[in-house]
Amino acid sequence: MTAAADTATTSTDASDIPAPEGSITVTVKILRFNPELDSEPHWESYDVPALPTDRVLNLLINIKSYVDGTLSFRRSCAHGICGSDAMQINGINRLACKVLIKDLLAKKDKQTTITIAPIKGLPVMKDLYVDMEPFFEAFRAVKPYLITYGNEPTRERIQSAADRERFDDTTKCILCACCTTSCPVYWADGSYFGPAAIVNAHRFIFDSRDEGAEERMDILNDAEGVWRCRTTFNCTDACPRGIQVTKAIQEVKRALLFKRV
Amino acid sequence: MTTGVLPLDKPRAPRRPAARRSNFELYSWLFMRISGIALVVLVLGHLFIMNILDEGVQRINFGFVAGRWASPFWQFWDLSMLWLAQLHGGNGLRTIIDDYARKDTTRFWLKMLLYVSMAIILILGTMVIFTFDPNI
Image 1 (cartoon, chains in turn yellow, cyan):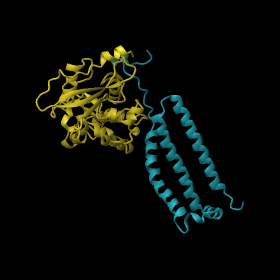
Image 2 (tube, rainbow over the protein chains, first blue to last red):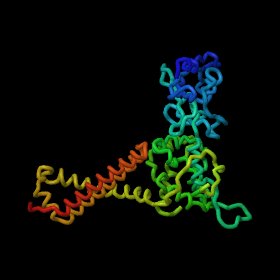
Image 3 (cartoon, one colour):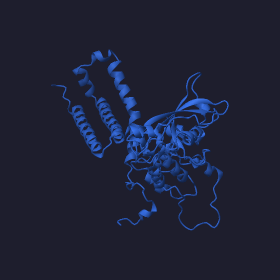
Image 4 (cartoon, one colour):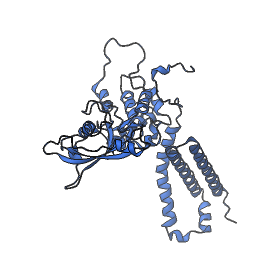
């Protein structure tokens, strides 16, 4: 990396960002990486105005719009539904659109610093933008779709409320990768299926209408399957949808152990 | 094309080896739980007998060990402690090596070292318990 390239990317003048009444200045520290210029990711700080009711995503959009247009990150719906803007905020995996600045403020009279890094365990393409393909490959590998055999019924497939309840929690997954990229086993071994894939397998394994439980359980019984889980609960803590991820993994373990779904 | 599935199905997808369809990981997981519970009883019992009961560690000598191993009960106790601790610890180290080794060759040689040292300790320990001669 040359010095000229260095100065070209380090414009941190945030005076153009509109500062509404009641806003305070916070430091946003972002782990930047430009594959065309940098050999290693590096931290860059931006002092930006923020309202306590702002979300972290607002600050990122402000930085991109007013300070440095080269800042790269994913976001789509910006309302915690699409799961695009998963990132490590103050060391914890969160959706940037669901974290309010008022929950990150430092104690009285101290400067607030918000550190933002890309989610871990997936290859970083640029700044906060990671290659999600390994994550989706694990998701596809557990066959996350309805599998049935025999003739199709002429009516809808009926299910009782109690049967629906069994996998209700795992239907909430939005595939943001917060859980999988918070898992230390996944960091160390990228071929581990990871919590998200297991959650989506759980959603079908425990569905009374589905007949593919055995296939999926065979896949998850493998060396890179559920038995690699060390129950560190990082996934449960990270999930922006409040899914009891670790519990779902243990339910799959139990089903394997007692050969009963 | 060696496989029947078109790669167009999912371009750029990383490849995942086919499932081995073995219950090894399931049984090793189960073994860790059961041996763990057994070891709590065995090891704490062992520590209590050796260090606290009667005069504690002061009374341990060649005669004490010889007296214990004259009984099949204590032979069995020590034998199961040896095997369970070795297999439990060895399996734990195996998963740690799987987690932390970055290259397949490193992983292979670390595991070889682990398995060889486990075998040596298991064979040596078992031999001592069964062939112990109190009259030397």
